[in-house]
Amino acid sequence: MTLLELRHVSRIHGSGASAVTALNDVSFAVQPGELVAVMGPSGSGKSTLLNLAGGLDTPTNGDVLVEGVSLGELSSRALAAVRRRSVGYVFQDLNLLPALTAAENVSLPRELDGVPLRRARTEALATLERFGLSDVADRFPDDLSGGQQQRVAIARAFIGERRLLLADEPTGALDTTTGESVLRLLREQCAAGAGGVLVTHEARHAAWADRIVFLRDGRVVDETGEARRPNGDAIATGGRS
Amino acid sequence: MSVKLGLLALLDEQPMYGYQLHTTFKERTGDTWPLNIGQVYTTLARLERDGLVEAAGDDGDGHQIYALTDTGRAELSQWFATPVARSDRPRDELAIKLSVALTVSGVDVREVLQTQRTATLRDLQDLTRQKAAVDEGDLAWLLALDSLIFQAEAEARWLDSCEERLLKKEVRR
Image 1 (cartoon, rainbow over the protein chains, first blue to last red):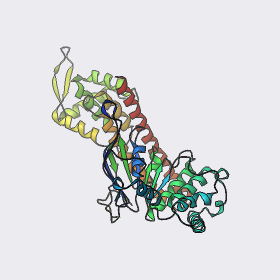
Image 2: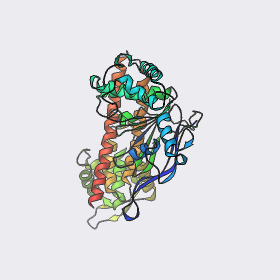
Image 3: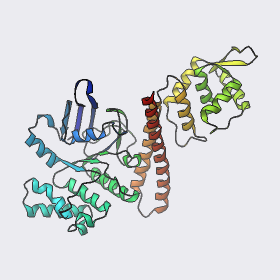
Image 4: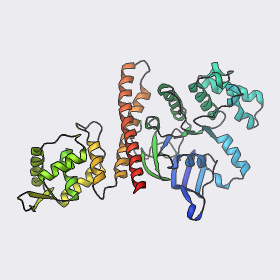
């Protein structure tokens, strides 16, 4: 099933003469196994696109579908549930709660889902192990390196049933090799069947994606590679390995 | 390759004679590309032979003036629409192309930039895929790939900065 689909999505802030078009008729889809990077100068609509994809903002026109569910048709309660259960977020910073250990940070979304504490912790430890982070489970964010913090944040984004990851400059302040290990991790998760949208202004980071979408003034101006069909095949050979 | 196309681009603005072309070319490319007057004349002769330019009278002082033909104009549009291959740059054709594109009317420089950016990012994706598949132990190959990746990244960043400068200029107008 298509993990994320934007159908002719526009977002206009304000109205009348002072209206600002942040996104203008943008359509694209993310299939399982696919990492899509979104690039563009500041003000091109990258963050707006990510907020709309994650149900944090509502389009003025068009439809956003997460795992086939149109977000516009949902009650705010149902929307909150989709945000919690289907979508994982990773931001540049402010990712982890400093008063909670790594394991508690990772288990938090499951606890909010209503999963019993003990089971949420078991799931969190299993997820941390999957990401090679078992030895930091009981440490607090301040005791972790920047790279470890970001890896814990990614682990948290994938706990439970979440298969769609939305990442905004996730390698922000990390050095070259640490940033690369974070991208490698995203890449591997997508190869294993998840889907991701990576917003970045760094060409070297975007290059880890299967497909790069270029935004300018709220419009898609170009793309590398071809969109995939929902069954995972490329529609045309776009040089994907 | 691109001396020829650089001269075609200049003739697209207005017909010129050889010496004028030589001076204008030097002004536009900021001496990044040494070009002697003899090259200009031999290139013009070849362009005329291939039907890309034609003789258009003289300037009254006996200087032969050349003008672009429709075939020449088509060749020029094709050049602007095609990204430069990273492996095919004995001199920096891309830098020449952009500085010339800026001064030729009717060329959408942001489109030229975007066409190039997409091609550069494709290269970068290919290199990154190769890197993702390399065994961590193969350090020599990793370093070589990194070198190519950083070169491609530098080009992408330069394209971004060209676009920013272009936008600032448009805003000031």
